[in-house]
Structures are given as structure tokens and as C-alpha cells.
Image (cartoon, rainbow, N blue to C red):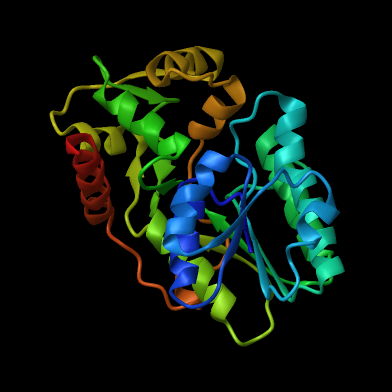
Length: 291
């Protein structure tokens, strides 16, 4: 069962899991179900607002892959609800259904004691998973890139702006991970025969600065402008055409490096070089535009 399967990570994860087994998935909007059903998943359109909403469709599922959440939420309560409350409900549903394994997608820096609201919510979610008594794997992934996804879209639109724009100082270290590599790690975790109870980190094989990533996307060497906090949020809102708040902008300005044992090594997944993953992603985007 993949919860929150409509995003860039969810679509890639469902596809990777379907190569090995039957997959169920949940999405909130009916319009998001069509692609997943074409892949072969059994999709339920529902809000996971109570444990019962999930537990009734969980029987005989070995693994829950919990992807609900993310930094971009309408308000602070929604941020905490999506990234912590949804995990508590999914864990309770997994217990009710007798699910064997729980996989949580998290981020580097997750910490119940931090002042950053997104990282705090993720840290509390991790603590709940560890205390659940269910087999579990927490994957702290750096920014994943592929078609879609707010961070990658913001990075591309910022790089292509005139002048180019980078959130924060631009000297923050990034090790973006190709979304298909992240999906392969999750599928390998589902396949693992040993009992699991741990936290792993995942990052791409190449490290660049925020400014360096913009140069890779733009390729003409134009120096970027920078902004932080609310000022950065306002620039991103204008570039993307959707509301972006200061919490999201401040998260994008942070370094994004793995801070836990290497998931790719632990589960036998080869990582894609940044230049190769970007080429595949941008070629796919160009093909969609041409079609």
C-alpha cells in the first residue's frame, strides 16, 4: 500500500513496486487515480483522515509506504497534520490490519527538538514510527528530482528566470537524488527478507551548491540573484504561480545532504549521476511539451 501516491515520488514508487508485486495506492483526488491505474495499481480515492479509512483497505498488505506529507501546506496546522498526524493514523491502521512493515519517507535534519516546523513534524513522525512496535524503515532522502515536485520545479523555474534566482545564499550543499533511485530503494526495502528497524539516508552521488545546480540547469553562467525567508517566498510564488510560504522557502535554502547510513548501499541500489538523471528528466519534459 502506497499512501499519497499521486506525487512524483509516489508515481515512481508505485511503478517500481509493481515490477515485483501487487500494489494498492491511495490518492485524494479522482483525477490522480487514472495514471496509477494504467500502471496496474489498485487505487482508492479517499482522505486518510481516520485509521479506519485506511485499515479497511489494508488487509493482506505486507508493507505500508507512507508518502503523505511535504513542506508545502496551506497553514501551520495543515503542515503538522500532514507530516505527523497522517503518520499516527497510518500506524494505527497498520496495527489494526496486521501489516508487517512500515516505510516512512523523511528528510535529513528531521528532529523533534528543532524550531523549523517541517523538520519538527518529520522528527515527531519518525519517533512515532520507531515506537510503534512494527517493522520499519525510515528513509531520510535529500531533494528528489523528476517530472514534477515543488523543489525541482522551483529550482528549474528559478534557474531559467531573467536574471536567474536561487533561494538562500546559494552556497548550500545539495546532493539531489533521482526519483527512480529513491523508488528503487523503497522497493528493495519492501523486498528485504530480514526484519527491519532502522533509519537510512539517501542522497545522489554528486554534490553541488545551490548556485552550481542553477548553472547546470541554465548552462550560460549567468550569476543568480538570491533571497531568503518571506522575500524568497514571494519570488517563488510569482515564478511558480502557486502560493509558496516562508517555511517552504526556508527549507529550500537549507543544505540537503544525507545524515544517516547509506540506504543505496544497504539495499543494493545503484545511484544515477546527476547529469544523467537531469538529462533523462529534461528530455521527458521536452517530449511532453512537444506532444
